[in-house]
Length: 308
Image 1 (cartoon, one colour):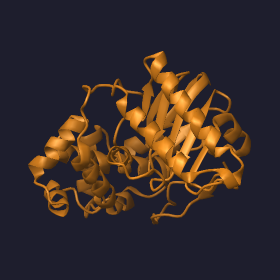
Image 2 (image 1 turned 90 degrees about the horizontal axis):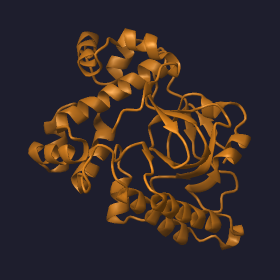
Image 3 (image 1 turned 180 degrees about the vertical axis):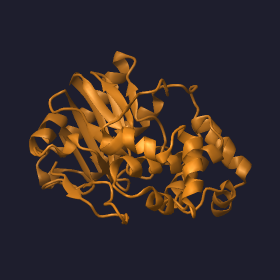
C-alpha cells in the first residue's frame, strides 16, 4: 500500500495537527480496501513514517504471524507475537516498532466498505472492543488465518475479475468472527449493542462541544439511564465517565503529539477557561497537562498494555 502523508484536518493555532496517514492504495482493484503483508508494506514505506506517531483515517487489522515486537496505540504499548490480533480504528494514534520486528497480514478498509449487516456495522463503531488480543487457541488462529487467506486470494486475482461483493462479505465474516473472540476483562456476551454504537458515533462528532450526558441522550432519543446501561455493558463505566474519558484521550493526543499551547488545547475541547481544563485533566489522568506533555512529548512516553 502506498500511504499518503496528509496533514489536513482540524487546525491547531500555535501548533500543527497530528500527522495523518490517508488511505490511498496504488492500483487497488476495489476502492476502500487493501490486504497486504506487513513486510511488503514496510518495503514500500521506507521513510520511517510507520515508526513515527501518526493518526489513521481507516480501520487496520493485523494478525501477527512471525517475530515479536511492540505496537503503540494511544499511549498503550502492546507486546506482539504470533497470534496477536490488533485492530486500530479511525482516529486512533499509533506508532509501529522498529522495522522488521514482526510480520503478519495487514487488512485495511474504510468504514463504508463492509456491508451493513447489523452485527458488522456495530463492530465498526468507535471504541468498540479492545485494540489488542492474544488469540487463545489454535482454532481461533486457524479460523482467522483462513478468512484472511480467502480475502488475499480474492484481492490478488486479475484486477478485472476481483469481486467487491465477495470481499465485502468475506470482510463481514472476518469482523463477526473477531466479535466471537473472548473479550479481555469482560464476560462473554457483553456488548452494549446498537445503543452503544449510536452513542459512540455521536460522541465522536460532539465530544469537543459538549460533555453533558443529557445532550447525548436528547440527540439520540434515549434517556440518560438507557445510555448508562449501554455504556456499563460495553465498558463497565457509566456514560459520563465514557464521555470524559474520550475528551481526556483527545487532550492527551494533542498535548503529546502537537505543539499547541495548553490554552489552545483547552479551547479546542470546549473549555472556556484553561483552569477548568486543568482541573478536568488532573481529575481524569492524575497529572497536569504540562507534566503530561513533558513525559509523553511527541510519543516518547508509552504505557504498558493494561490487563483488559
